[in-house]
Image 1 (cartoon, chains in turn orange, brown, blue, red):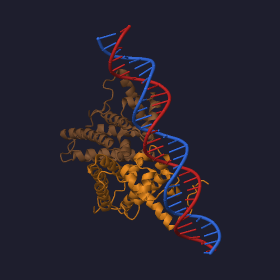
Image 2 (tube, chains in turn green, red, blue, brown):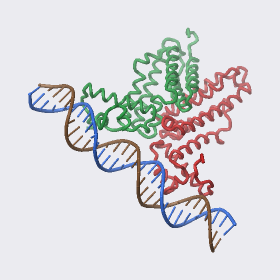
Image 3 (cartoon, chains in turn yellow, blue, orange, brown):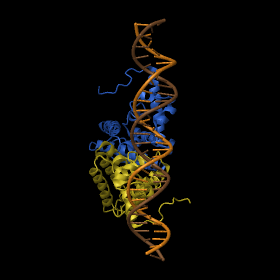
Image 4 (cartoon, chains in turn cyan, green, blue, purple):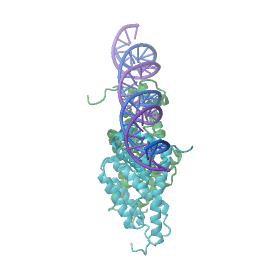
Length: 207
Length: 207
DNA sequence: CACTTTCTGGGTTGTCCTGTCCAAAAAGTA
DNA sequence: TACTTTTTGGACAGGACAACCCAGAAAGTG
């Protein structure tokens, strides 16, 4: 019994409730952070009562990890087809900026916010977050690789470095923008990272 | 009485104790985060007992804010003279990378870590953090301005943007590196940001 | 229609943790 | 030395919160 003995089979109804809980938790965490969100809050927000929460999750930590997983996956969904052109990268960056403008102030429940709060305290969550970041980086990396293969990027470009740089720029920009309640840092950061990547455009490319 | 009525005058001894508390809190928060650090932990680590903590600070929040202020100031101390040359910027970045290597794994109690944890939940702390970031940005900005005035950077360089981009790169890189337990993201991020800044070097400069 | 498994409700418990109180020791001041 | 202010000690109350238990409703399964 290495794995928890939670409901082995979930009925559609049960699955819906489970998702409702994760949704509510995600929203609350986005506004008040992990520490500022109690089980009781999640309960009432999800309109489930009593011990449902512990019926679907072993502990608060398990719930948080479910939120992390969902957030990590959400970026890999249909939203982002492929980051394999300068235009696609630009659109991706603009979407991030737009998102920041929408939730002006209150943070979005991105991996970055979660990482800031959990990396130091919870080792398991940290691992989940690290995996999430790694997948995001690979997503970017695959796009860049496609660009290089198509001759849009120079052969000598260090794609791994570029991917990490872009991801860091996003995360740092979001962190600063959320803290300072202003988009400027995020815009500046993403613009810089994209311009840097563009500086590796192959000479003969249509660009 | 807008201000708290904490000890109006501190004797040298009292001040030493107060500093000892902040030191202990800073160290503990660096390892376990704000939420993972209790008053009790701080007490024993600082080797003060009982209600000393509330003798010097109104609340846990006040203590945290003191930690924030200290961290914000620490970067403006003698460590950084002036970031007004490419070499100085490079050295600054290398120092950050070095610091990350030293505390491999456990986070340093930088503003970024604190921001990730507090921005969403505590408005007062968020303001303190935002001010801290602003001062850091100005520190960078002043350096860049000096470089431009000396003719090392092109006139058309958007220094404010560059400063924010560099700061974001640092914060994002640290966040990723701490979460992934690897320096690569920070290195990549800072290298990219510095290279981008260098791309604004004035043509005639000795570079 | 029996029977099993899953789902839901609410109450409860025990723990952790912030913040307070009271009183004594030490340090400063005259 | 007499007196005031600051500093220290430990114990304690009050509240918040995660987690558990039991029983009943609903939904699947043969």
